[in-house]
Image 1 (cartoon, one colour):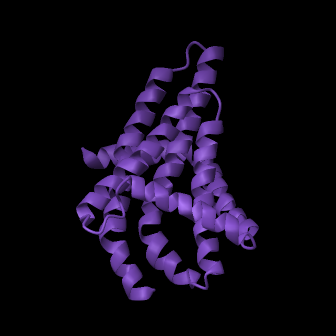
Image 2: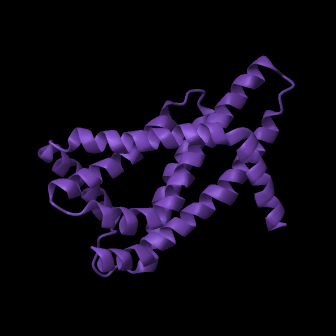
Image 3: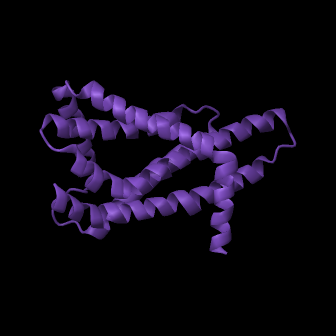
Length: 206
């Protein structure tokens, strides 16, 4: 049963989602790289932005000294789930700006982080391989796939306007199943890795 679900998801990805997925992934990468190089010489801007990021984590009580790894995992999952859900639901707005902006800003945040590390003389490679990639290889595709699903929904709504025979309900069903079975699963894995494994890796390699 589960095997068939993911086999179907792979077919949907190959047939319907992959072009938008690659496009949004490139947007994410471009925003990260460009923000890194643009901000390298802007120490005050970087420190202000990082201060705001820290404030967000403090508001969510994620920096409390007595918080458990399980609580961190739950908070990370909820935060990333809501972001991905917003991207997904933005597909019902027949423009792609909300999904584009969220993915762009998330990529830019990575660039800001690395620029902050660079100007403070902290090696980038350990943070990339120990602090970002272990959970990022699950979290980033989840967000990007949510963007691809949003694009598919918007495109389907346009098709329905010009072709009454188009099976919009089936498309919505497929995208919803993909979001639940793929995006949510990836976010759960990412949150567990970031909460339980990432701190250990950072302590070992940084």
